[in-house]
Length: 38
Image 1 (cartoon, one colour):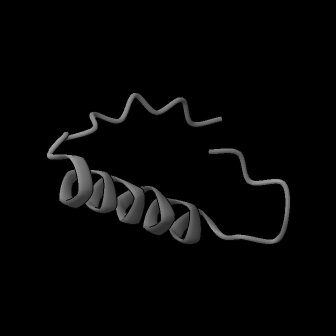
Image 2 (tube, rainbow, N blue to C red):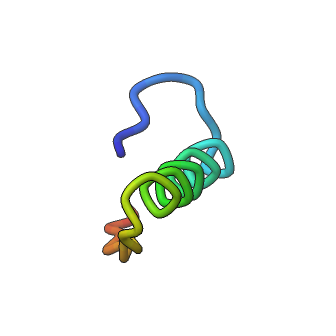
Image 3 (cartoon, rainbow, N blue to C red):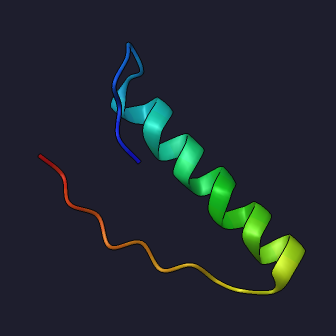
């Protein structure tokens, strides 16, 4: 995920968590984040 607007760090993390939860619920796959924070 890349923040190219006015989102906060908390917004980006919340979106990442929501994506992880949705993928797990739909496909039974647990995504493992490999964040590069700059």
